[in-house]
Image (cartoon, rainbow, N blue to C red):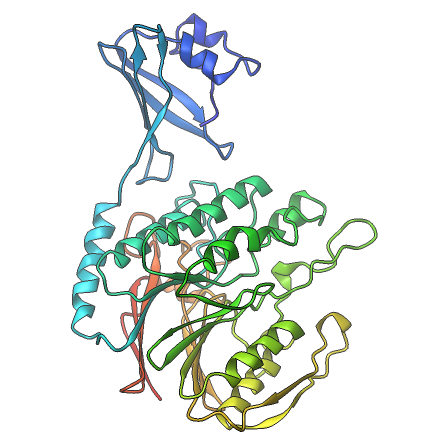
Length: 456
């Protein structure tokens, strides 16, 4: 919390407060008779939030947000008064705790799944496209993006998960850079809270280009290293997560015969034009580049006898088999097909842009028994599944709230009639990969299909 606004309910001293006074001076000097007051606090993200101040007979103060929904308006604050030093002690933030209706719902969801899961299978808890932003919007994107990640941890507490994952667009990328970085950092820290390992792939909104386009004249508000410093440092510090390429974030996680590979479909070079503007809008440019593809080839060549699932933000190809990325999506799909057929050759797609040209040799002729089963992603804000050349594409719905009356809301989410404070507000998945039975079962919660089963 940074400061307080003036209010007619405050005594004269508070009304004299101006922006040049320090917050500590205000806290030290301002006292009130026991009772209830109304004020507005400005939070760390520059948003004004209505609060009720309760003052007790012994000068203890409690600040309660006048919120419309759980946790959206702001935290609860408490401070006590020191009669010895004749000043207030520091503000303390009191945790709101988990939303009980969500906690109960996810516990019941986990109990129903428990008898369907086997100890040998690899079980992932997945959210995607949280589009978190510092705005308490009750019908669309807002701070409930982070809340949905926190609630994935509630599912993790049931003990059914081997790994947690976020498939990109963690933030909406429309806030001021310091705010977006703080929100992205909180999401990563939340995923990293438990002993269960996590992974995260970069989405096309995670470079903050939405803000750059609207407010920054297309100049970069994030540096080339911002995402890596916030995400990859924590991601690859985990002993269970294996890094293959630090630049792109390519990595993997193993359990038994199952290998989950994390692929970056926002692998776009950080280049500036002569006027300081960005050459590429990451929000509009989905791509995979030479270095990541070389690393993927090396990883696949060491993946004999593995049942492989690739997790990325955007789908490589669409249902018709056409390229779904601006650069090299179809080429990477062909590489996965070549692995399944134990082929040897050269990947050299016809790309005229020199920033995205690819010329990579591969030799999968010696791999024994390895097979790419599926590619799992978000990005499209809907659910879909299709198979092309033996590889199943499984698309997951966005966690972010998409109210039915917004222009960008997909038909899939309009049909859910999603509302804040209900089970349709969020969407998430438990994905169970069983090498023995050769099955992937996708169990959805919230605004998601309850069960989808795939055989391989």
